[in-house]
Image 1 (cartoon, helix red, strand yellow):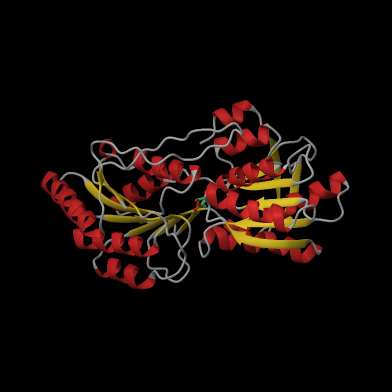
Image 2 (cartoon, helix red, strand yellow; image 1 turned 135 degrees about the vertical axis):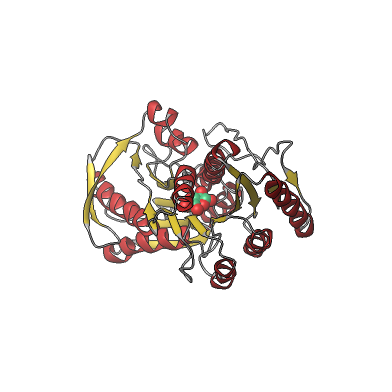
Length: 371
Ligand code: GZL
């Protein structure tokens, strides 16, 4: 677990020949403290908290981040650290929970013991939260949830993030229209899901499976890649052996899994993308993912917006001013495609509304402006 006492970890992404990238291990700055144990993390937080208390003029915010598993996560961390900065009056105490739910609960409890002013959580999984949120409520510490949702408690002040079921519905609606436009009648699908029990995995699976069920598509298999490139590659390596010649669609629940699946399909001589035998669908639409869309390797990439830092700061500033804040704020999330075949898609979203979304054909200017 990495504890950034005054600033969090930065991290850099490399890129491989496929245009994909793997988020390198976080680079730590002099301000960061890398701890080997929870006790060291607690003492680091305590020391940081004492420093902040001594200064007296900064708002202390404890941020328990999921981990560092993907390009998306790096962008999320960078967005929050850039917004919740000393320049903006915040003393940010950052904990990278390394995809470990128990460590995340410990980090939140440490923030409560510290007596921080606010707690920000991106919950690794969506359940198991009511007890610790009750402790934060009893300590009169407002909790802001970002990105993924907490589904077994509403003892938090505000949530900012994505409608994950809509993301899954988007992928299903696009695949239905794309297959019809291409004259593909039989869809034999392999799915690589995200971290089991995360709201992102739950929602994307629920939405996409609604289209599988409604249209009689053939789901050959579904296994978790845990939102990592290694996970996507390992699952795809197994799939190309078990289902050789049987599948024509692969859906990955984030870009890093898609990068891994691409490497596995390349090694197995399976063609994919615009000119291939397999339609490849992804989520997140990070810049490396959109690079693969532009190259025709990924057919469609549904954005999940990681840039909640400014929203966090805005919520804290409003709460400091005694203003009401919305319980839920949804991020805008474009649908990106490789080919200019369909201008838009009309579908029924998770709220039962019929909505039309534009399909954005990726070009370099979009990638340059991306996260
Ligand atoms: C979704 C986010 C997911 C991304 C993955 O909002 O929590 O976690 O889709 C990330 O890339 O690992």
